[in-house]
Each structure stands twice: as C-alpha cells, then as structure tokens.
Image (cartoon, rainbow, N blue to C red; front, side):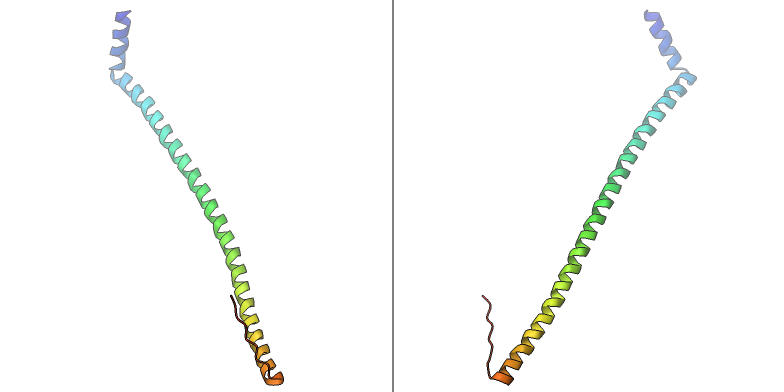
Length: 99
C-alpha cells in the first residue's frame, strides 16, 4: 500500500503530472474568478436599476413640486390683484396674516 502511495506521488511529481495538476488548478481558479465577476456584474445591474428607479421617482416628484410652486405663484398674484381691487373699488383693505 505504501509503495502505491509513493508511486502515485512520483507520478504527480513528473512534468506531465505537474502540468495536469496545474491545468486543474488553473481551471478551478478561472472558474472561481469568473463566478466572482458574474456576481459583481449582477450586483452592478441591480444597483443601476435601483438608481434608475430612484431617478424616475425623483423626476416625477420634482415635476409635481414645480407645478405646485407655479400654481402658488399665480395664486399669490391673483390675491394681490384682488386686494388691490377691493381697496380701490370698495375702500376695503384686506390684511391676511398667517399663523
């Protein structure tokens, strides 16, 4: 039995044996590296999709906010005009105070 182990070790230490072992190790390493790269690529895709979704949500929110700001600006101008008309036509001065 011991002789078989020594023979197997001798075969592994030959040039062909070392080349076979190197090929196996190289294939294992390349497979592990490729798996790591594939996982990293999947994570980047997921992050990119999340960022795109966030950008779309923020864009919609900013459009709504801008529309509300524009509407508020128009309302302030209209109230100012109404106050001016009340004062000039009716002599009533309107004073609005917020809390």
